Length: 219
Image 1 (cartoon, rainbow, N blue to C red):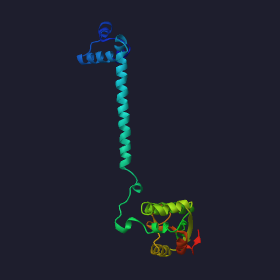
Image 2: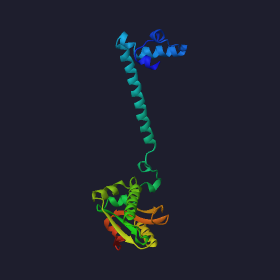
Image 3: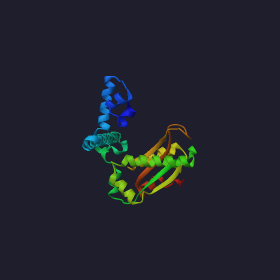
Image 4: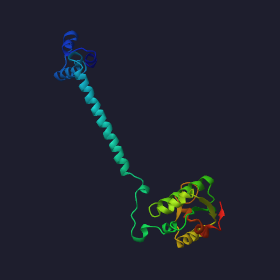
């Protein structure tokens, strides 16, 4: 039936010339397919144009619906870093923002735990985590401080300490001077034990950061 339909054989000719005997449902289906595919050539191009327009509109609606669905799905799954966190009271603005109004020379210092004996690639990855972690921490709370740092070519200095206790001591020192800091804690999937503190990042006016990390050796 399908071959006869698409080769232009009408249902009447199918019964007369080929002796085909089908059920009523099959005959009606053949009539419908033949009318849609072959009949427009006899009655003119209007039917063909109408069918093509209908198909084009349907495909366009499907494509538009798919695109809108993808966009809405992407908006529902925005990274947490793009969502402005909610702070209350004095925590809304970090103290380093006030320092940005007085000083222009800003830098970031990364403090790496040398006692963990991490490989070069591991150190690079942990420094990236620490930098991004600190950036996200002050993105909404100290935007002017970040702008100062970016205008200074995003200065980053990598130093080292020999123990976790020394790193925590530097963290306390930085907090006492109102400098933002972030310590990266490793998941322990590769070289080191889980929950190991690997790298600390400190950001602030250069002379104040030097008071915290100025005595450390470069990595």
